[in-house]
Length: 343
Image 1 (spheres, rainbow, N blue to C red):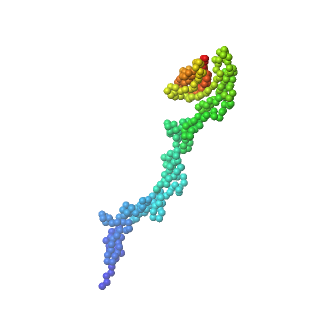
Image 2 (spheres, rainbow, N blue to C red):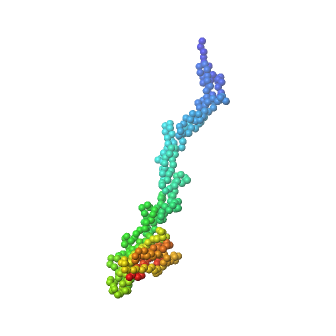
Image 3 (cartoon, rainbow, N blue to C red):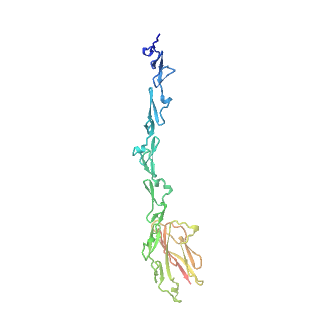
């Protein structure tokens, strides 16, 4: 006796629900869900299976997109499919002009950075120069003037000054080193400039050879009975000095110069200081003798000190013997120090 299998699937006599697939077997049949589906225990129907949720079939650099009965893997932004993997795209090398300055590739993306002295704008692509002069104006990054340049700044000095090795401090240029005043004048270096002085000898005195600022008496020897001649100094030597405004006075004293008279015991010298003239521009206070202090220190010698701080920068002419004609940039004044009586 032979038995013949009945194909319930083809006859439609199976009891599979419409969402299932009937598969015939030898003497039996089965009800199965289509690929990508599973049988719901609640509805007893085939429902789509979310492979992305249950199996996570895609790699870290890809996104899983579920579809009915299946799924697909798509590379995330910044990645490209290579074989079965998603590799990083180097946007910096493949696309020009992404960043104004520097492009830095990152995993799945990129970022822009700026050169020193620039800051990244809100678009994260372009850069704006940092004005260091304005940003750090309270720090005094330059002693002179600060000039902003793209990506940095430079310190500039006024005329008569040069920039120091640190790039921020201005140092006075000693113009007198190049002898700008010629062979017959004395050069006085000042802050930011210089002045030329030509010494004019008093009556009955002439310039001493080889000295720009020394006058000698025409009559080299005096008759012992000629007191007028004896009381006149043998020579005048002029010295020049400068000192800045608001000059601090350490311990209240800052020696300007010293004058010495005859050093033999029988000699006696008296010193006197007179302010002859003070010429000032409008708005500048005139000085007086209180701005200077004369101190008799050792035998037949005296020292001159500033009596108080000067309100403006100064350039002074002062002899080391017995006459002084100081000049000040904001105060022009003439005073005289001399040996009042020498015996």
